[in-house]
Figure (cartoon, rainbow, N blue to C red):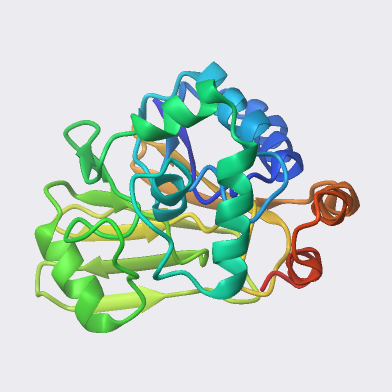
Length: 248
């Protein structure tokens, strides 16, 4: 089986469509979504509808999904994120709103090798960016591989049989592969489809080959200018459009 694994789409329809076109050539057997379908971008309804139509094998909700669905307030968001969350809530159709409300709470076990979450197996809103959080999260995971999102940065963390931790965030070389070795456990973040924050504006995604036990990190260009124009036309903060161009 080969899975397309995506996270943090953030209402960026152009980025999502580019990922789906690029991954189609690899003939994936299914899609797995790690949360944050909405927030920041100008196409929340179109993105939710597109994801629903894909019939994902598994998905978990993200923090922006919760806030947009009214399941949680935006008190913890910065002013720009709060403004876009408020806009998203008013823009959502009833159908999209209901889908977001019913998204599963992570972590979710997908199969005997894979578990997924938005932030961490410990807490769906935890940002895994430091050694201690990575070690604790890997220990809490119930499978060899835990795929997560939330930080918008591609990352690979692993603990081997000797309990040695390795963390890599390969800035400047965002396309790479991970051979999942027997006796080791992994936390892997595919990066963000619609809001990358590692200095590369291209949409990020992963392919997980269960037969060969390999995870591939991939990037693809998308119609950035159209996504920016939609943001501005919707009256969302201009800084969001500028950030898309620099991957921050």
